[in-house]
Every structure is written in structure tokens, then in C-alpha cells.
Length: 509
Ligand code: AMP
Image (tube, rainbow, N blue to C red; front, side, top):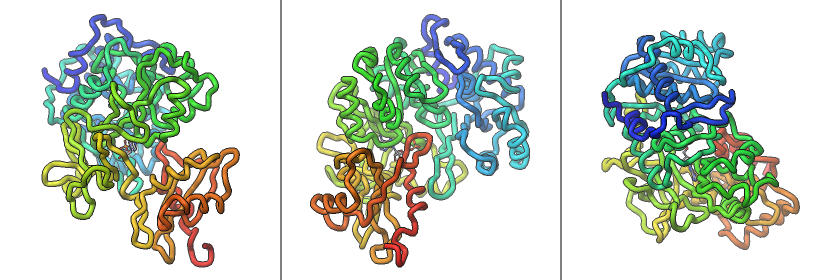
């Protein structure tokens, strides 16, 4: 039977079934492509035996292991919809997701079963299974007991393969519905653009509940028959030790900043790598330059999101420009429009980034109105990111629309102010946010991580006044040890705004 996404994996299986898929896993086990076929088939059979029918959701909140990926592919082969949940979600959060998604099965860590089984029951989920970080649990046992040869359930390009909930820093978290072709088309595009082959060995240290580790990294490998050094988590020393055996790494910017702090990061250790990719959050231009100076490699920065898979990428061959996310990927259309009028904007004008292509999702699960509001009549999806396209066609992301600061009626793009602050001596990094201000509506506020020799607040303010229009200059500079980040390395500006909400309250500023 044709199963659109899994057919892509089958079509690209390495000639030798003993070819390695996962190495360096938490339990030290090695898995081959033959294991992938057998184990994903076993999970598919176990799910079908448990009553899972095509279109049913399979919700999964488990630690990273090769078995989770076998389960992902098993769900796809069974015609089900894979629904991974961030391992950090608490019981009340899980209750929301299960109530919203109404999965046929919920899979959790055995250690959390006592806590989460009543939650699942409360949400009307008929079956709870377990799977731990070593790949053991009731579901793994059911898979082992199930028939191993599985005839894939027929699924077409438009059928759903996965639902990924967005991190939802404002309002309810939304389930992004991704079709077989959304995932397959993006995998094919990335393989082509980044020149993946069966000879590649990818360092995989990302979580697998998020689009980056689950789809960008994994599907690119599966669509070429390549190998992964599959680490349970990111540890700089471990990644450095493995680097000589790898050809590629995909990471979030914090991987790169943390590796740069390791004295062992040298040209020699990175000599066998052909590609370093960064995404999920902005890579500082300075990190890009430091990495190139240390290793001789220009990091390839790309831009995407849960809803759209990957949209743009710096070129494999050609200029990888620091501070940009590169041109639109083949088959993807990207435009920048005036957020108020919707009119297309010209070169270098900052506005709302919109995208269209086979990569763009099918809408938000059970939120038809929200979905309708985020798509234009001509099929473009409104990303919520502000950016511009330069004369070379390279896209620059300047931040989330909701992070735009409006002060005294003027728009301030935080990135522009952050770039000026980051260029000051002794500044490690900064986040510029808007905080309620009695006179200005919002007061531009800089939160700075300072290293040795960082100037004091008054000096920073004075320096910026000479470089930025007055309305863009921060009213205050606050110093912190580090910026709050989520699992994907994104700075959580909403937390900073909450922490400092009262900064300009009457009598304080
Ligand atoms: P997520 O859905 O968690 O993958 O988050 C997607 C968001 O991450 C995008 O809408 C952007 O705001 C941000 N993002 C992803 N990649 C980049 C990048 N290379 N530079 C700047 N922002 C990025």
C-alpha cells in the first residue's frame, strides 16, 4: 500500500540493510535500517491491535530514544497522526492537550504513569501505554509481541501525519496539522539544498518533540539513508568528542555559543564536518563570525517554524551571510507585506513575513476561525515574524510581531537596538523589550548580559544616544546573569516582560 511519507523512507533505504541508523544512543545500542523497518512495523501493528484507526491521534510524552522515532514512524505507517508533547509539560498542561486532541492512545514515561493515567482518563483517552528513555515500557513490549511484518496503511499526500502544538507564549497553544506531503516535500527540499547523502553522519542532540529534531534533522537523514549520532541531550564535551566521526550537525544557536566556550573546539576537531546548520532562534552575527574564525566553517542559518517546516536557508554553495536566514527554499514563496494594509513591500522594507508552499501546514486543529485568520485569500500564511528581504533576496528576521515595541506612537524593532548593544565591548548578549510606561505606552528597555569590562547603564545609554534615534533608545538598562531561554534556545521575552512589568510604574522610574 502506498503510504506517502513512509514511501519516501522506503525509497531511500540504504542498499545494505545493516547500514547504521542510530549510534551513540543513551543505552549504547546501535540500530540499523533493518531495525527501523522491523521496529516501526511492530509499533504500527501494536497500535492497530490496540484499536488505533487511520486519522486517530497517538499522543506521546516520553524521553528521547530511538524507540520514540520508531514509534513516530509506526504511527505514520498505521495511518495515525503522531502527536509529540514537550517532556517539560506538567499534568495540567497534558490535560489540556489530551482534552483538545482526543487521542486514541497516550504514551508516557513509566515513572509518570501514576500521575498521568488519571489525567488521560479524565480527558477520555481509552488507552495509556508507557515507554522510557531506554526504550522499555508496556508499548515497547506490545510492539515486541506484535507481528513484525506490517502492511502500511494507505495514506495520501494530503492526509495528516502529525500534529505539533506550538509553544504558545500568548494565548492557547495551537495544534499545527502537518500532512504527509508537508513533511515529505520539506525533507526532499532539505536533502537537495543541503546535499545530504547516505554517507552523512549527523550529530543529533536536539529534542524529538519539536519540529527541528523530529522533522528537520530526522526526516533529512531518513530520506537519504544516512546515520545519526543520537544523543539524549546536548552536552558540549560529548559533542566535541564525537565531532571527528560526524559530517554534519544541526543545532540551535545555544549549541554554538556553548561549544565556543570549549577550548577543545578547533579547526582540527571540526575538519571532517561538511555542514553546520543553525535555526529555531536567531544566531548572533558575532557567533557566526567567531565560529568561522575558530573552525573555518561558516554556519548555515535557516528559518522555519512548526507550522511551515523550513522556509528559507542560506545557500550550501554561495555566501552564507551572518545575521540573515538566506533566500526562500526552492518551491517556497516568501514575501514581506505591510501588516496594516497587506500591501507587498519593496526591498529592505520591514514588515510581516508571509509564506506559501507545499511545506505550509493544513491549519490549526479544531480552530477553523484561527486558521482562517492566519491565511490570506491567496493562500499565504501570516508567520507573525517581522522581517525584510534585501537586494540579494536574502531574508532578515527582525523579531516576532508581538515583540514589536510601540513607544510614544513610534515602532521600535528590538533587533535593531539589540544589534547596537551587542556591539559594545563587554556585552555578551541582550534582549530589548517593551514595558508598560505611563508616558510612552511602552518604554524601550534593554536587558543585558555583561561580561568583563561591560560599561555601566549610564555609559550604555549615552553611547546609544549617539547611534540611534532618540525614540529607539532604551529608557533603562538592566543587567542579568543570563537570559531566560526555552528548550529550543529561544529567549523568552514574555518572561522578561512579566518579571520587569512594574519597572516604570509611578514612583519607580
Ligand atoms: P517554532 O515553531 O518553535 O519552530 O518557532 C518558530 C519561530 O522561531 C519562528 O516563527 C521565528 O520567530 C523563530 N525562528 C526560527 N528560526 C529562526 C532564525 N534562523 N532566526 C530568527 N528566528 C528564527
